[in-house]
Length: 291
Image 1 (cartoon, helix red, strand yellow):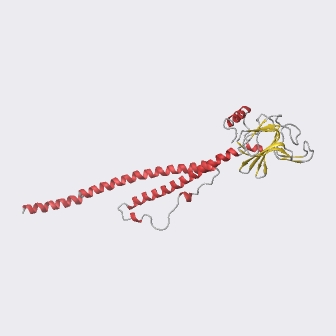
Image 2 (cartoon, one colour):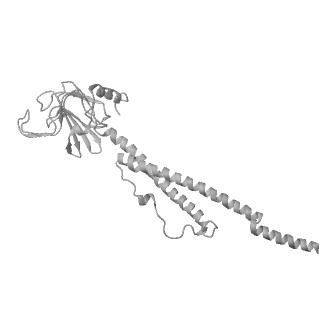
Image 3 (cartoon, one colour):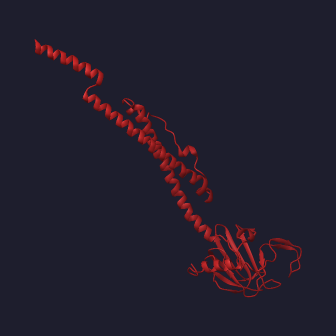
């Protein structure tokens, strides 16, 4: 009787204890759940930090790299794509903390997609940067003679040509360079003409820079480059002179873009001192002379 009574009392006691405090297994599971909640909270903070990093990369991408390289920005709808069709997270809906798990998984998927888009964007920027660097090397971007040399006529309509005496357009920029002044290529390119010109330029050089640009150097006294040679910016291509239809020693410098005459003064900086210009030419020529 006492034994049976003891078993009954113990059972009641255990039932009351488990109802109030839970079983060891249940308590262990609850502890695991709390630990998981803590882990998800830490994961949430890591997600937020990752999103901030991605946002900083996006701001640099859209506000710095792409404008400099003349690239279109990536639409926000493409950076943050939505999902359609089947329920992607249906498998998690029966879990005890389904909302917590689904929220973490959705953030992970969004972060993965945003990272993939940003990675692809940086790949495009890298490719464009290499092409931009090549283009920058080829465009005519320096003065063809020492900046201390005064300038003559620029692009203008002359009422009277100094030699021919007739009215006509002057399509380049003249530099009043003394006879024998060194003349430099203003950008990398290929020499497509080097010799005597029948259109009044006398001894002249024409460089095709690609990207639609050509430069003409007229009235030279000496030519240092043959047709077909690849030159780089700062290479000496000849000496100024008085050849062709010219009233005195000078250099006629002309830039054409897809056949349209451009103002050469728009293509180089006007704030270099003669010493800085000569240092620049020396630096440019410290590499191989021709390519």
